[in-house]
Image (tube, rainbow, N blue to C red):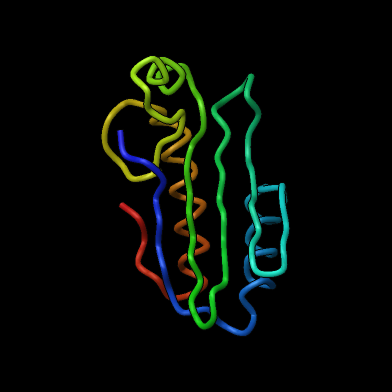
Length: 119
């Protein structure tokens, strides 16, 4: 099981406006905000494993991290000492549906910045 999906791309002057518009359109809610960092969440523990997207701006670069947190398979992985999260790339059955949905949403965000989609 792979950890968080991490991407880096050039930050535009309207980075936060684009991110906020994307979050609203894709029903991600702001969970934490700092000057150059925002964390968004989608989903509830009871219905489906929640998806998380963190975006940081470091100078002229934007760093995006995306992951799914704690479904049954991920919780079972805790017994082997692994974190209860996985990245959003395709492949495997662990949290397959929330990974696919999150990947599709994150790809819409990446398209706003002219970046290649996650496969």
